[in-house]
Image 1 (tube, rainbow, N blue to C red):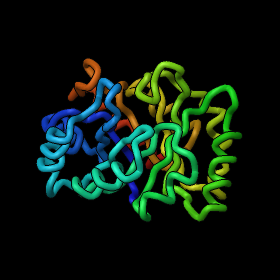
Image 2 (image 1 turned 180 degrees about the vertical axis):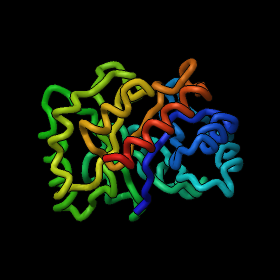
Image 3 (image 1 turned 45 degrees about the vertical axis):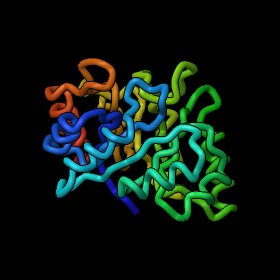
Image 4 (image 1 turned 90 degrees about the horizontal axis):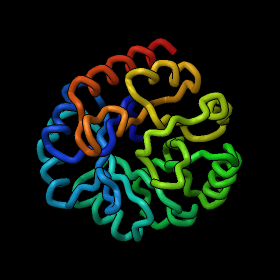
Length: 221
């Protein structure tokens, strides 16, 4: 199973990829959702993957409601390490990815964790369980990267002993990541807008701060 502790998502340039890798992030996300401000074209994605050659980081492809054949093709062509499904893909969808590793993202809103647990129960019955679960914050405006903070006390109730490990996302930044980790106790954290100087552009100072604080707190808990 692909394992990481700190993921910087929404990488849009080779420079930002190297910045995040050198700061100590161990996973980087490439966003293939065309309506996102962090969308990367195939050519840029190849350049990013190229500069990461030899770097000890996982390459994660984020997809929103793509045809599974397209996801599998991009995953294979770029030699990615993990598929992040961030849309409305049903449990059956995972069976069409040919065993490629999946992190299923859920936007947790007013309904709480019930829909997440129900979805994963269906995955288990289909023998299509994702390797990781990403808990993000629901927003009616975007599939992710909204910068809205989640209900950490609610997310802490996720039954981690019975279900896949949790990656925490949603409104994280250097100011709150330590508090969030202590509250939820996830396996890993994922950040995009919280370390940006503008949408799709990472701030070196914020990335370094976030990685250092997240790693120290993850080790602590």
